[in-house]
Image 1: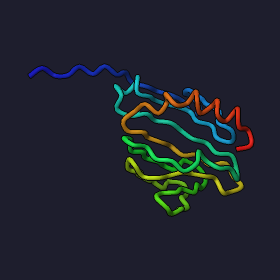
Image 2: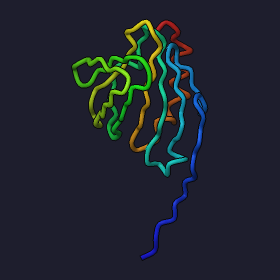
Image 3: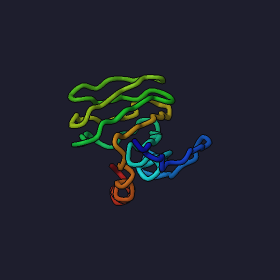
Length: 137
């Protein structure tokens, strides 16, 4: 049996490095996307300014998401319940589950996101445009 050749390469990024997208009071920094992971996952940091809303309640048909709170405290909607998550909290959101996040504190908060399988980064140009067109949202 022939072994499948690994087409991906190592990635080493310092803090703050990656592809940055400004989305109103949120900033997304993509560390790895489907092109770099052979379409297996996308990894991004999401930073929310104090007292700011997230993307709005939504679900993904075919993608699981994993969140890990890097800094501060973040409020997460999972299904129909909001949960307060402090630094170090881990959440797994299965596909088809309604979810959202928000920063309800006076300090900046950061979360790490794994989108499985990859591809979420394809949405970022239209998301950035939506926030530019709707600055008060």
